[in-house]
Image (tube, rainbow, N blue to C red; front, side):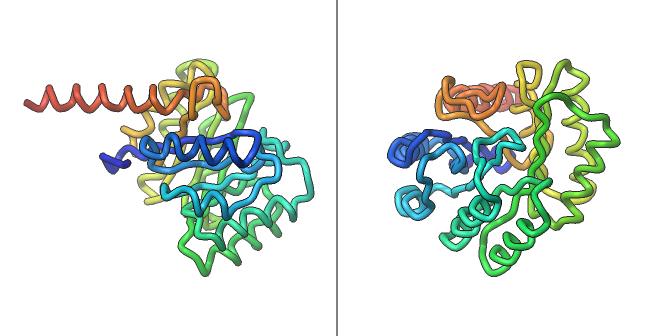
Amino acid sequence: MQENNQYRVCVSVGRPDMESAIQAAQDIADLADVIEIRLDSIAGAAIKPFVQAISCPLLFTNRPTWEGGFFNGPEMDRVDLLIEAIRQGAAYIDLELQSPSESLQRVWGAIAHSDSRLILSHHDFKRTPCREELVEILHSMQEKEADIGKIITTAHDFHDVLRILQLQEDASVAEFPLIAFCMGRAGIISRLATLELGGFMTYCAVTANEATAPGQVSVDDLRSFLHLLDNGLNRRGQ
C-alpha cells in the first residue's frame, strides 16, 4: 500500500480469536503497509494461518502483562510464538526492551538466519520521561542491536509530544530507524506528525472501537488524514 516512503502505516489487529483476527487482517490489507498481529489478544494463537492467509507484511507481537499486554504465561512460551513467526517468514517481530536477556538471545538466534527484522520496544502508559531518560532508552536499543527501535509514551500536554518527537533527530544522526510517538488524547497528533519527521512507522486500529492502545485512530481515519495532507502539499506545489 505504501505510496510514499515517508508513510509506513501499521494496522494493529487485536481480535480475541483466530478466525476473526484473520478476517480483520484480510479486510484492511489494502489500507495497510504492515499488519501487526497481537498474539497476546488471541485465544489459541498460531502463526501459520496468518502467513498463509495474508500477503501484506506481518508484524507479530506477544505483549506481556508487565508491559500493558495480555500474555501472562511462561516467558518461554511467549517467546516460542515469536520464534515460530520468524521461522514462518514474518517481516517483523516486536520484543520488549525489558525482556529477559535469555529471551533476546533466543530471538536473535532465530532471526540471524532469516529476513525478519527485530523491533525492540518500550512503552510507558503513565508518562513521558525526561529527555535524558528517553535518550538512554534509545541508546539501549542500539546497544542491544535492534533493527528498529520503538519508544511509545503517554502525553499529558504538548511538552510531552515535542519531547518524544525530538528523538527522531537523535535517531537520524545515528541512522537508526525509530518508531516514536505518544499515546493518549494529547498524543494523537504525534501519531501523524511522526511520519513527517522521519519516524519509521505509525500504528492505527482496524476500527475506532478496536484500538489496542490509548489514542489510536482507525486506519480509515489515518488514511484520510494522510490523503488530505498529500492533497494540500500537491496544491501548494502547483
